[in-house]
Image (cartoon, rainbow, N blue to C red):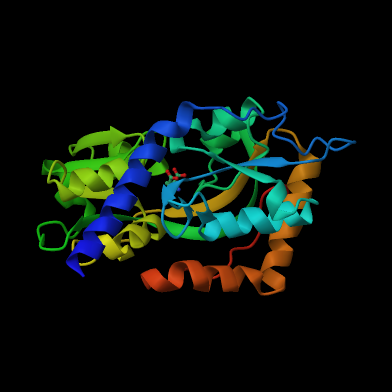
Length: 284
Ligand code: GLU
């Protein structure tokens, strides 16, 4: 049993290490517009997701993709005319999402991507399709952190280019010793090794980490709602047509029950109680 667990943990660690360094690669270059340009060569669509967030976007050791964002991306792609085998998933770390869209490296980003005005200066969104809240993950035996202010004398980890890192710096705990990493899996390692005292990001992401088999009993969510994080599907600024189509797909996904199914199957195992599907507001 122990040996099996250690093996599983090593496999996950290997995947996380691999994906953490894979973000710069572009071995399979897209057509330059993320596919989906319409016309004759409508053969694939490139979609940016997270590779290291269990429950949302995860690349498994056998090269498959799982998570709620993956299910949303797959549903939307189908509505745009692409079958699952015509989707190329590309890693979209938090700080790179706007660039990937603006450069045409991806057509869509479905990656725990909060809609906000700063980002809307560079990209457009469809949705929102999900509502999360910023929370804290601490070690299971730590009772010294129960509210945001407790972070002021502590070492805190978040991810570059995320709303969570920004919130900590500007309002939640400006005196915290903030370590910014490229991805949340690096923060999780830091939390386990006691290099940091807490990891902050969306509760949806933290619940996924806490529930992983090899993390069981190690971490706990503090249970705060430090912000609203409405997730949108990122797309090229000014592409009204695509925005309208993606909004229609998201609406249909909720109406036909696929949205709830995806919530249950992806967040159920983590015992994460999510908010109901939000109203679509982008583009109207
Ligand atoms: N939803 C937040 C954001 O868009 C945090 C999660 C993430 O970094 O993907 O920045």
